[in-house]
Length: 185
Image (cartoon, rainbow, N blue to C red; front, side, top):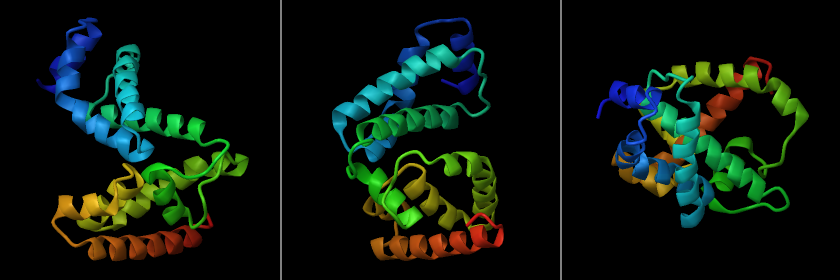
């Protein structure tokens, strides 16, 4: 089923669309949630929450890319659940490992300064991603947006785990240099 058909069904409040969305995007959303949470039951609950969230947000939302919109909804739900579960403790899932790699420190709770600068940082990160080759960008996004394990990225791209690890290390260094140049670090 095409995105436009699904959006039309959402807008006309046809509940049958949820069956189509689950069939088309269910395993994709589950993978995103599982990579963040590291728990099957929590991932399944996030996927179910995704369908409810889509139902409640369309309309008024009318995304151009339904695939990306659905992924973002799932990711946000899973991240919020992860944060709630880890407020008092550290660790768990690929999210903690990936965030520690990227930030160079253990994943921490909310920080007011980070919230204030998040918009500028987001714009800088998007600009930085535009400077990367398609392969390096895909590796970076899979690891730090979808929290995919290094082994899965290597398998998905048909490259060695070592190549993924080295690419991530070099890309993090380039990102650090870029952010320092932009005055964000």
